[in-house]
Length: 217
Ligand SMILES: Cc1cc2nc3c(=O)[nH]c(=O)nc-3n(C[C@H](O)[C@H](O)[C@H](O)COP(=O)(O)O)c2cc1C
Image 1 (cartoon, protein in one colour):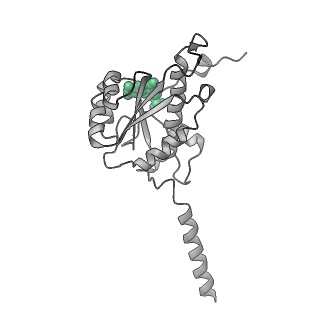
Image 2 (cartoon, helix red, strand yellow):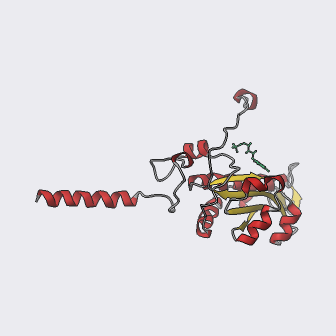
Image 3 (tube, helix red, strand yellow):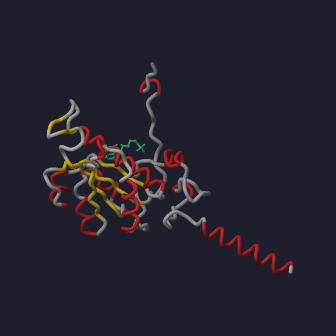
C-alpha cells in the first residue's frame, strides 16, 4: 500500500513538472539568456531588464515561422491612432531573402549575420494623424512613425518574453528593401529588426540621469 502511494505521488510530480515546461518550446542558451531561469513565463520586469540590443547571434539556433507568427500576432495588440494599425511587417526567414537583407543594412551586416530572421517594418502613410486626407496637426506622418515605433516596441518585448533577442536597425537601405519585398509607395520603410538568440552577453548601456529627462510639476 505504502509503495502504491509513493508511486502515485511520483507520477503526479512528473505530470505537474511536464505542464510547466515552457513557453512555445523555446529553450534559451543559458540562464543569463533567459528572462527567468525558474519560471516558464518571465515577469514584465525581467523582460525589461534582460532585453538588450544584441549584435551577435547564435548560428546554431533557429526560429520557426510558427514562432514568428505567434510573435507578430502579439504585436497586433499594440495601440495605434484611431486603431488604424498602419504597421506592416515583411519577414525574411528563407536563406535567399536573409542574404538579400543582410546586404541592405550597411555596417550592421556583421552584427546580424547569424540572426535566423530579419523583419522589415513599414507603416501605411496618410492614416495615423490624418482625417479626410488632411494632417490633423503639426506631427503629420510622424504619427504613423510613432505607431510603428509602438508596434516595434511590442515586438522586441514579446520577443524577449519568448526567449528571443532583437536588434532594431535604423541604418538600412530603404530603396533596396522596397525593391526586395515589393513594398508599395504608400508605405514608409522604417526599421529592420533582427530576431534570434544572443551569443554571449551584451554590454549594459548607460542611461541619462533621471532628473534630466523627467520633470514633475
Ligand atoms: C530607431 C532605432 C534605430 C537603431 N539603429 C541601430 C542600428 O542601425 N545599429 C545598431 O547596432 N543599433 C541600432 N539601434 C540600437 C540602439 O543603439 C540601442 O537601442 C541603444 O544603444 C540602447 O541599447 P539597448 O537597446 O541595449 O538598451 C537602434 C535603436 C533604435 C530604437
